[in-house]
Image (tube, rainbow, N blue to C red; front, side, top):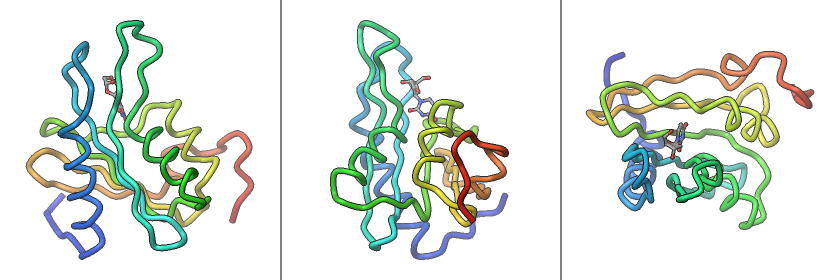
Length: 136
Ligand code: THU
């Protein structure tokens, strides 16, 4: 998809990319960043944080969601995931369910490659019939 970034995309991409650089990913070496725009026009970003006990690792999206909740916001308007390579990095199944908790039918998920290509989908395209998702 052609690079066509709005001002908001650029902010989210910059924040996700900045967090991505701080990822703790010594086991997979797969550095991911995520950034959210919430209902209060606040931004939140995080990166993946792995652990020597592999299943304890946390995805970048989960960290960004935690930061949003800790700030007092409750709704994801946009979430952008920055991939470490030239493939898009769609949220894993677990993260889709975590996003569902704070998304609605308008929530947009943006995926950015390392070279800055962007792909946007509605959250409901990523997780149709999500459990516990009854928002318009
Ligand atoms: N990862 C994320 O942070 N977000 C995703 O959407 C997919 C995967 C992380 C988890 C793990 O630290 C590494 O990428 C490899 O799977």
